[in-house]
Image 1 (cartoon, rainbow, N blue to C red):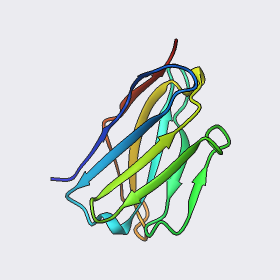
Image 2 (image 1 turned 90 degrees about the horizontal axis):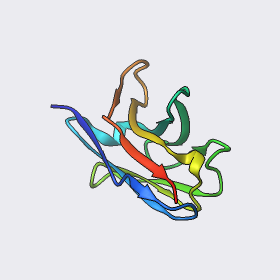
Image 3 (image 1 turned 90 degrees about the vertical axis):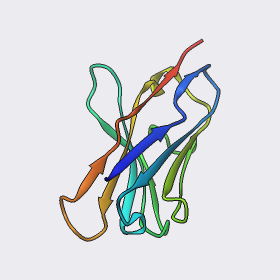
Length: 119
């Protein structure tokens, strides 16, 4: 059974750090580009960070650039998002997405993990 399970969210003070994890099972992880999306209340889902299948390339939205690092461990079927200098506007549900590197439209989502940045 295919699953993407996020963890690591929670409540953090402004300026703090978090590391999100997404553990994948039921798919050939190394064939999927992995992304972290986020959605804040009343806002559209946005794509803050993406990493290619062999970690050859990473992309960040301006909202997280310079404050975050996306990485993957293909041996553990896990992708990470380390976020530093968190701001209240980073508050959102963060979702993990796996997109097949060659087959268009083949992608999967996790259930999301809540990140709340507040004092």
